[in-house]
Image 1 (cartoon, rainbow, N blue to C red):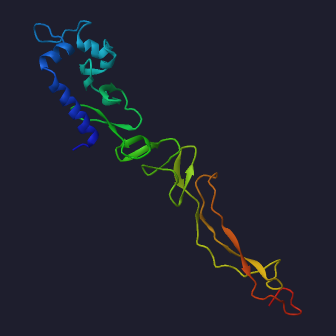
Image 2: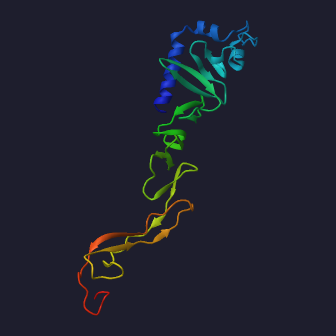
Image 3: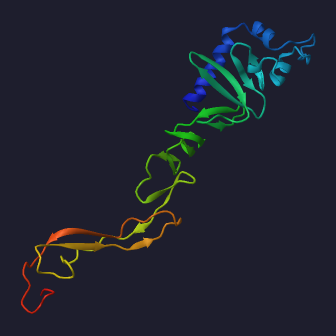
Length: 228
């Protein structure tokens, strides 16, 4: 099994071949001379496929005027285009956005990327470029980078962020360098940068924070204005 996209194009090609009489289909797509060899005149469907007598048949090795390509010339990729209720085959040099090149002995195909919000992919499960507004990280697309990673706007990727250590314990509650003489003060805790980010423009998270606290001693001991 190659996935739903391949099965869909396979069924499309098979259905188109069965719904027409082979001789009628062959007559419309490929004129033969008496020896059974393809006629290379300008009316030949091989000519049409290569040079675009019917624009829809450009690049085809087998083509239906109404339904487009059923098979492609070597090195081209079969793409099943859908427009409303209509669908038709095309042969492309490169697959469009949201699809990736899938090479096979019988015929190269364009297969849909299965990653959500992916614009280009290497395989159905590995994205190489995300749609606008999303960041690429390990073959997936994210609106916000996972924890420990930072967004890099130039490439729209999630890169290693600034790594910080654990928070220290909260310090002594104080105010104006005093631990007494006030009802309320501030206590602070800190942490250290363990690993700087690879890009100078990627900010590190805060390494110090303070909060309001209640003084342990409302009144200072006489003769010791700093507390104690």
